[in-house]
Length: 350
Image (cartoon, rainbow, N blue to C red; front, side, top):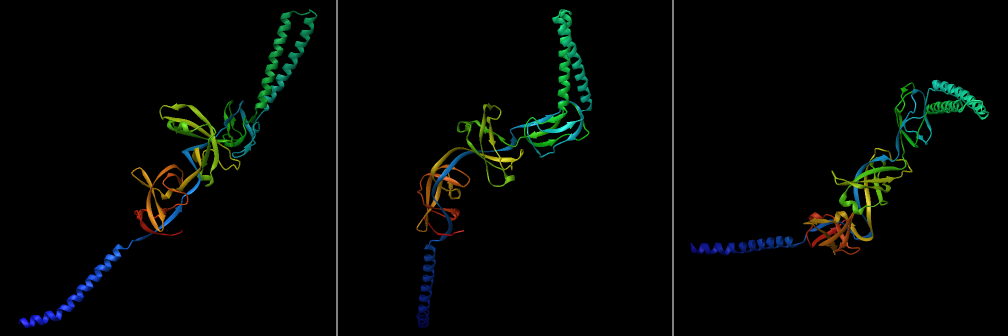
């Protein structure tokens, strides 16, 4: 029996050795693969020099700097409309006319009375010089003449006021009457808005006030007219802080030669209060923010190294770098979340 066991051991030993050798090779292969570094595909950008601005942002509704309700100075019936909404007008243009028949008759009556009073006054003056009438009679004739002259002037003005005129230039933004309407004195008939210049009112926190001053440039972005911003500037800064909100009223003025802007449009406004002309800057997408610190991955020889940096101004696309990077350094913009310090990377292009 012992002889049989020895024979089986001799026969099975080579197979056992071969199996152990195979397991050892598989284990070694897995270890080698584990030790190989994973290559992460990334997109990159460069550190460049250029201009970067610091700004305050806010939102506001565009308004007309000049806007008025055009009122009728006399009552009457609307006989003729000369303008419509959307029409450009100049200061003094006639917008509508009232029926002037009654006022014309009143003017003729006042003119006749004035001529009669003037004749009496001149005759009384001659007689007074000849001492043929008393000073009292002369003064009474002069009073009646002056009185009729005032009545005539009022009638003449009333006739002129039957033509409703705009006191400012701009565009007719609202018509409030129709032909045949009976209107009263001082009733609003039209609304005229000046489209150049236009303004926007911002309410800025008082802590930002020291950065702002009259004349600072602004950029207005209005979705309704496309992506191109409209330039403006700070025209007025209120001297009063609103105690209920802790804000200051800022008036921004802009001109619109192409006449794209309209009162009532919504605008996002940037007030640029400082510009660094020769700053190092990187794409905003490259920044990693951790524990109030900023870092980037710098690529050298296809390896990404984590680098802490100090940043300055930030705009919509770029960040100013104060310390930690040099011009032309290559930094990772896309793929940061898959990286650790000293990760091997492959740069891909869009």
